[in-house]
Length: 273
Image (cartoon, rainbow, N blue to C red; front, side, top):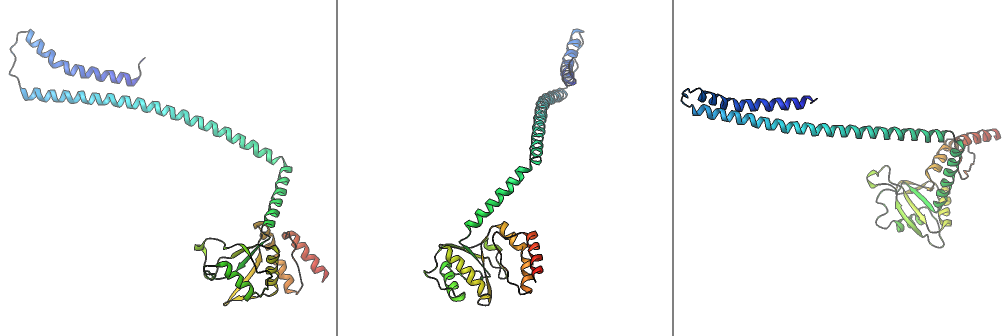
């Protein structure tokens, strides 16, 4: 059976045909009965023609709208099918991800292996930084246009290190974007020495001669470590302050111990007092 849209379209076509054919049929009937036609009202006929033309135009536009609606219906059906396909793929991916998570959760050996690999990577990174030295507290723009010459002068004149041969650097630069620097918190300078012995000499001499001042600014010197090692060293800071307050000499061996080990060491130190 035809659907509602087809029936509606067929009804409109019949109405348009009847509207156009009715005046012609009445004229033919009058002529066949021998009646004399009344005077023709030409303006009325012109108005009727215009109305019929507008009705036909409306009919054509309605037919075009029917075609567009049909196209939109087909496109909507296609979109629904695509969405259904995407949902099915998403469900499949979710199931696969759940299976992978379950597999990882049921293999603790892999987690231990990842921890071991992370520790090895941290050790390799620390070894690659052994020739680096960080300088904190140096005001921005103090180094001028030649940062290597400035640093050599700082090491000789303010820290008092006598090098033989003179210090050589692979790279020297500030760390971090310039827009984040301020007068109260200048960016640190990191220097990569050509010789590892000179880097160790700078760190040990600066530690022995603290505090170091540059035009009223306190300068600090430290070794360069990975982020994980720095976190472990910070965990040891509370214990270091306790030992310093008790005038107890201490040392930090690499790799630095975490908080739990530091707490254990603190108990041992107090037990020996």
